[in-house]
Length: 141
Image (cartoon, rainbow, N blue to C red):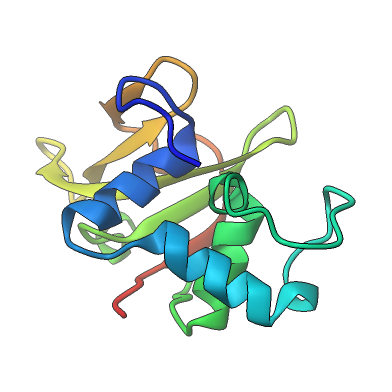
């Protein structure tokens, strides 16, 4: 289920960030999905969990955070998004995306950079309000 650190997708950014602080989100998502499979999105036609990919799907991460009471309000106030918060979006092409709020503030604003991977590797960008926000989470197990 892991890819080399120089590779990956947006969900890998989240998994790696939590691993860096001692939380194995890949394992936690898999175990929760095994126990509550029907509570998770059924977008891929699967009948059982797949520990290699389940944690790498944005809808599954969103549901995991929702199930663990980590959802917080989606607002248009930049100051509501704090370092460590997870944000999910839907892109203009309809694809889902996810990133994490960094601890680096954008000069002259109350907004922090987002760490995400949207095809060019992991980057810091000022993109919080660039796409339609579909979720805001603060996961503290």
